[in-house]
Length: 459
Image (cartoon, rainbow, N blue to C red; front, side):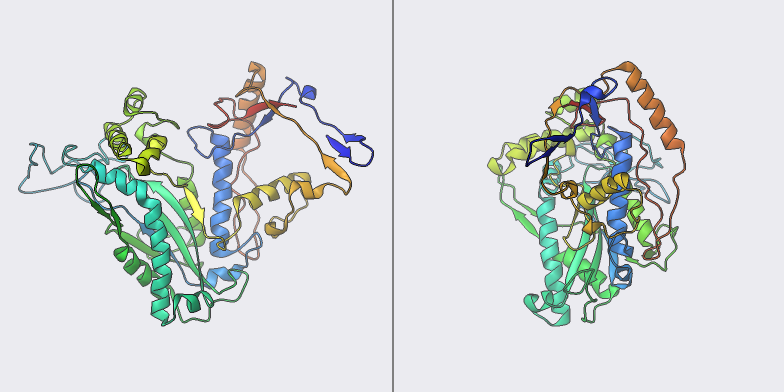
């Protein structure tokens, strides 16, 4: 309710009791499509805008960022043993001599796997596969990334002949990092990286003579040089963790076609944003894992793949190595990865909070320009008139729809909304397509507030 602080008068009032079933439903906000399709669809649209604004401008980010050196890099994990893979040409692992491992298992595979083949990503020999190294690399991947960002800045400073301090005064590196799980249970790191001037996207470009080719060369050399030595485990084994040998860099330019062929060396900003936003709606459900996993036995009981179960077993063993790995048990559901699916540098583009705040403002005032500078949209509290205060009290009642009629109506509404074609607009600044964001209908199948779907509250 809205209260006049001077007189105590209640000017406006809202109560859940006025709703049809006496409850107020709010979004769960879950990004996973397997948990909540509608919230996931909205998250995907928000992520698309966040990513594309840093590559082509829009939402207040100048369109001139599209003219700055920018590359789309993919960093991979190293190999911990041969696995079944999807090949464009030829069989999985063709070998004339048909070698066999010490455990008597074939180290070759003449099969042509399909995309939905359950063998993809599984080791040819699970006893030869280094599951401990796999878990350690996955756990330390955020630290490897941190070292990569530091080393990349130092590498570019060396290329220009400047100290790191002098380099920062004339140049800034902006990026957005998205994590994708491979079939073998390890992550890929996809990173659009851009070179700005010292004031970021709003300022002038850097006056340093750095091209996209210089940036890509620095990324390659940095990836090769980053190391992380992990102290010996109780069995005396020590590990040196690195990035994988496979590295892909593609130049980002708005002169490329939006439907560039796979394998091309240049890509369009919108193509990159769409590619990355798609992966943000996924997690480890392809391995048969739910949002929470307590043990390998639990994972096996819910139908997780044998490879995923062995990764969790290895993670449980490593978790017993000491305090440094104790939190591994909290990350069984993500196969030991403890990072966020998307992170970005502060100056890359807009934020999720700004995008969501602008959506709320647009719903209150549909006249808001779609390409307005959303960084200047004020908080909801800032819209209150002087001398007034918003007082509220909410109580969590349960998850999902508490009335079957409401649930059925919501499912029908959501289905109708998803079949509608959204209107499109064109931005003069960035020529962006319309927000691929989310239909307004509600999702009827429900889970806990932290897991997805709408959650009823009462006030």
